[in-house]
Length: 115
Image 1 (cartoon, one colour):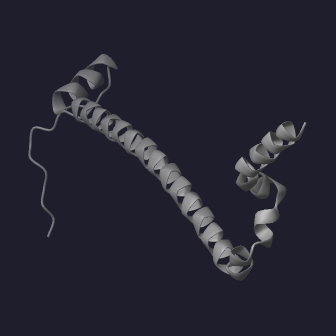
Image 2 (cartoon, one colour):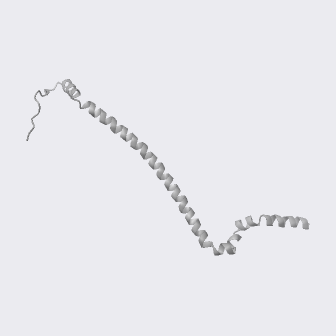
Image 3 (cartoon, one colour):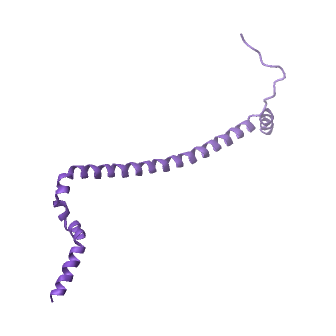
């Protein structure tokens, strides 16, 4: 019966560090009592680091979305500009006026320059 008790004691001693961490006994240790402020500071800095990294990643994702949207808007503006150039040509305007059977005519004399 003593052998069983000795094995149990050895098993407890082998897992002593795990039991002290999980049980909270490690916090009563002198090293931890003396350095608790430093450990709290390190934990706070770790939390700031994690938050900073997360916010950076979110900003990069948003930046990528905005870049894609910007290229889409640029292509749309280019398309609209080319359509406007096509519709504002003199030949297109003349065809439009003729199709509407308007009394407007193309000027045969150049415009006057008023000084």
